[in-house]
Image (cartoon, rainbow, N blue to C red; front, side, top):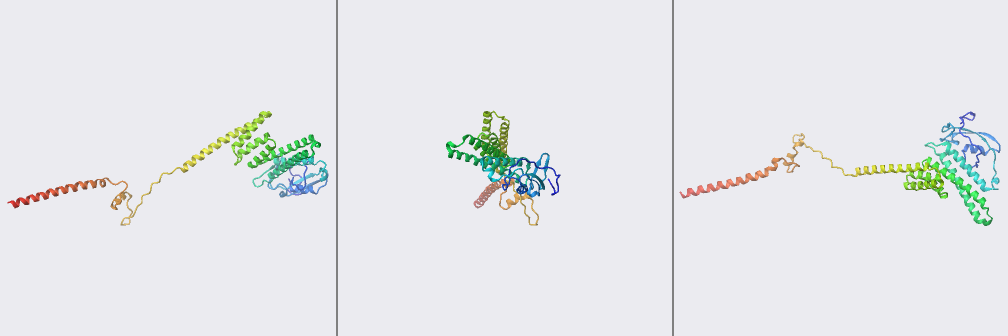
Length: 357
């Protein structure tokens, strides 16, 4: 770290040895690449850089020191050797593997030492880019060897071809497995699962890829527990066949079991909540309304039954006397008619007696 160009005693934030970089392919930070571009073989130089051409808002650790975000830095560089394009043409396959290994080494350094912030994930994408580029180059090399074997026939050096294919495959699997680790660290679980599947296409019993595929499937919102279960089952089988330590796979199995239980609890709670929300509610009691009397004063709600009767409407619970009155009226009316008839008959008998006299 160097706050200004003259600062030579700042804390060390990075140390690297024997890195092989290709100018223009963005293996390293812009400031470092630009400085090396103008250096000659065997030359030493100090390169000072503003933070925006170094790590920007990202940070980096070295031993116990952690470089703060937006720090200006100073590199001390020694260019050991400059390779011309024709130097790699004599054995292009070996040279291509050296470049792929260099990408892997630089990406490993980024993954292990550069720390990401919530607002800047540039270092993460740079590591992924280097891993995937190295893997693609090794796929191309393997395919080229297969084509050479078919084309040359008996003249093909099979032992040499097998060795190159083996080395290229090892680099390929390491880069893809490391890409899975970066995706998991950055919580890109779907991409991690896809990268793990790519490893398993080349090596179906790759133990690291199986465990990482299981974890990615568990954490991926679009994944399923069946995917995790399948990956763990194969990993358990690989442990038995190859005599590997099964500690990690047993932990993964326990984690899957716990995740399933938590999922069932959440699902049960969600269904119970939905049932409560969908259950019909009892109707709320209607408030009694009041109206003003002729004097403008509100009437007593207790008199609503009387008002309903006077207006010709029956209340919900009529009083006792209103229920007895119709029957009492009928009885009284019957007796009144009876006595009226008896009275008229008596009057008629009296009138006839007077005429006979």
